Image (tube, rainbow, N blue to C red):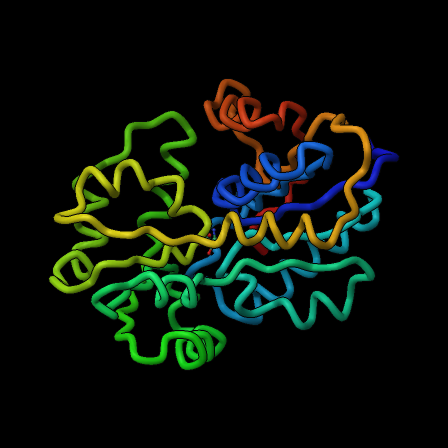
Amino acid sequence: MTREEPVVLVMDSGVGGLSVAQHIQALRPDLSLLYLADNGALPYGNKSEAWLNHRVATLAQRVVQEYPLQLVVVACNTASTLVLPALRASLSVPVVGVVPAIKPAAALSQTKHIGLLATPGTVQRSYTDQLVNEFAEGCRVSRLGTTDLVSLAEDKLAGKAVDLQRLAQAVAPLFAQQDLDTLVLGCTHFPLLVPELEQIAPRKINWVDSGQAIARRVDALLPQISSSEHMPHQAILTAEVDQTSTLLTSLSRLGFGHSRVWAMGAE
Ligand code: DGL
């Protein structure tokens, strides 16, 4: 199933990167996307840094061996806040990372109190400290790390109802901060839950994610080709899912109708 046409790899632990892929598809309908969901190792948010570095490098190298790559999008904050320097050094194509959108959130906030909702890994990274120090001057930043929203987003795309009570419990510490008006969705799974977050939010909150900025970055790096045609997008999973799974239906609905499995486990 190796393809001749160059592809843009969009990789994440699961369905989260689809929130980024959708923006890329909208801005650049000419690009063929290869979506890699490392569902065999989901979630990334509680994995050690050494494990994550090794895992992402292994997956990217395997893709390079099988596909002609144009560009890699690490559509995962948990991985991007850690692996980008090593990954860029090991690949010959550009690598675009997704990191929490602290800067636009700080600019948008009226109250100058923003929240960072991300995975436990992302909230504690030194890279995240740097982003906050550099781009949130004059702002209070409340951080909350959770993997609950990752599984709720996975459930949603697998066709299950989102448990609003579990969602509310997970985000309660941030919603309880009365003057917090802007929330950075610092995990690519979380934009998939914005309709549900809006349902349970105690007041109007600005939700900020990096999806559009990433699509613009991809657009700037890859020359437009005249045709708006692309080969069918493809997906790779690292663990089998039931063939009747709604996950496959969701992938197909987003244009990833062809999928294959590299059974890898989480070693
Ligand atoms: N979607 C990912 C992120 O942006 C990872 C979620 C996880 O697997 O914990 O951080």
